[in-house]
Length: 177
Picture 1: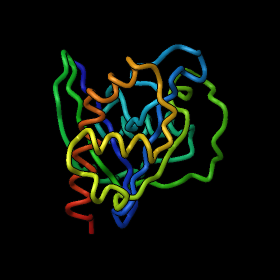
Picture 2: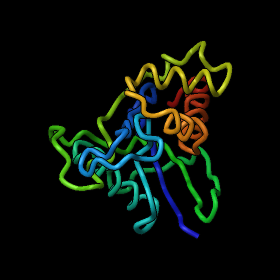
Picture 3: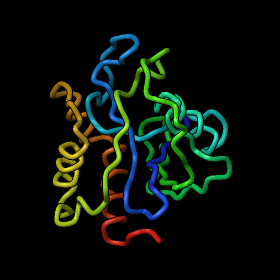
Picture 4: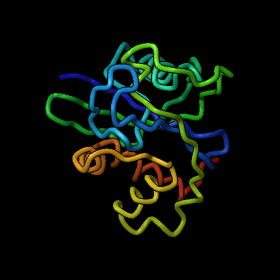
């Protein structure tokens, strides 16, 4: 069984969240990507504990523009088992902009995402009637370029999409202190 850890980055007041958009094709290799062209969440296969994994993946996937702090608190959103994998999704506000400008990818890992987006949770007030409505709003507001019909279906049925829906519902209904 493989453990995977992911985190949505909330701002300190809990009014906004930051996440990457997955490139439809890896920007370094040109390979078509699972759920490419749609919102993603920083993270991946465990490389140590949850925090260490999220720190490394956020640095890679943001092309070093963002960093998760040592000792950052991780708050679980959902946990799911998919085949042999256990996926745990968190939110954290223990992160910062590094001041490094977004640059071209230098490896497969840094070419996975096409950009980083920040949205306000308040943009989802009135759009929480169904998971599909939330995902449509997330895609539209994020400026996700989209991908193939298969990539869209991969995103909409993914655990990543379920984590976004739950986090948005939690944050619209109960803003963070």
